[in-house]
Image 1: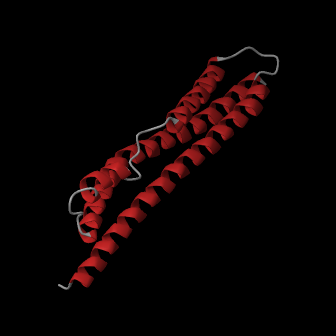
Image 2 (image 1 turned 90 degrees about the vertical axis):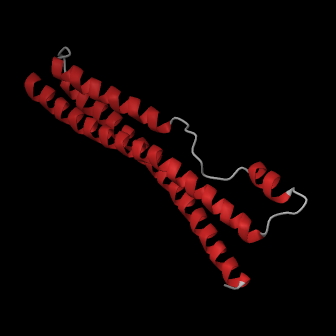
Image 3 (image 1 turned 90 degrees about the horizontal axis):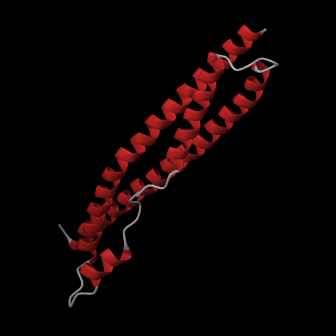
Length: 159
């Protein structure tokens, strides 16, 4: 295989690794945005339906369950927004020290190869965290559904 062909293949692998990490960053941002919308929906639900269920009445066990669901969504929202050690970029020092600042810098195709493997490992490491965010968002969605059901039951039983 000619060096030019090899260089093209390494460049392709490198660009795909960069694209994969960029898509992961977008996915993480999307989860955080959806978590914010979900929490906003939960807060609006609590303020409107909760106020309606309290019309001169004291808290019922169902009302407490609705408030517990609200608290659960709020806790999950915070958990999703907490900073995590995502690996979305290569540390320049880890690139420069071993590959460029040597007596004889490594060829560009070897550098692209090493960076591609590093980015793949980062991609794999990030997958577990992203799957965790997905599960948290699903749980929060279920809690919002339960909250609405609890508030409706609370309203129906107080009138």
